[in-house]
Image 1 (cartoon, helix red, strand yellow):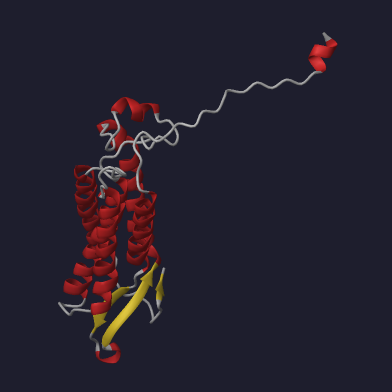
Image 2 (image 1 turned 90 degrees about the vertical axis):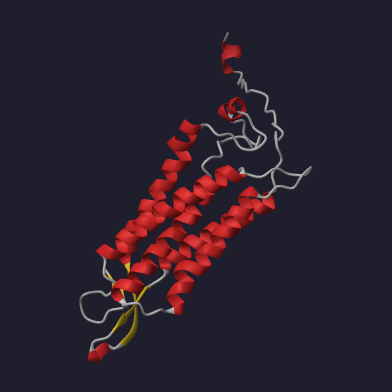
Length: 222
C-alpha cells in the first residue's frame, strides 16, 4: 500500500487534434484584423477639426479630446454585445457549419462561434459611422459648412476604405479551396447595424462635446 501510494501516477485524456470542418483563408483573416485596427484607431485618434472665426483666432483648429473615450467604449461594449449574447441568440452558423457543430465548438474546427451578425463588420463599420457623425456635426454645426480635407480623410475616407477591406476579408470565397469566415448576409447585417449605431453614437457625442477645449488654447482637452 505504501509503495502504491508513493508511486506517482498521472492520468490524462488523449489529445485529439480536430481537423477543420471547413478550411478558411488565414491570410484574409489577417487582412480583416489589420484593417479593423487601422480603421478604428484612425477614427478614435483623430483630432476634432473645426473652423474658428473670431478675429484673434481665425482659421482651422484641431483639438484632441480625452472624452473620445466615451464613444469608443460605447462601441466596444456594443461589439461585445453582438459577439456574445446576440449571436448566440440568433444562432446563425458560419458557412459550412451547422448549429450543432458550433454548439460543440471544437477548437480548430473553424466552427467555434456563430457568424451573424459579423462582429468584424459591426466593429469596423461602427467606427466609420462614428467618424461620419463627428465629421458632419463638426462641419455643419461648428465650422458652418466649411469643408476640411484632413478631417474628411481621417474621419471618413480611411475608415471607409478599411471597412471595405474588412467586409471583403470576412466574406471572400475561394471555390474549392477555402470558405468565407461569414456569409454575405452575415457581413451585411453586421455592417448596417454597426454603421447606424456608430452614426448615432458619433453624432450624439459631437453635439454634446464642442470641438474647442473651452479654456485657453490647449491642444488636448480633458
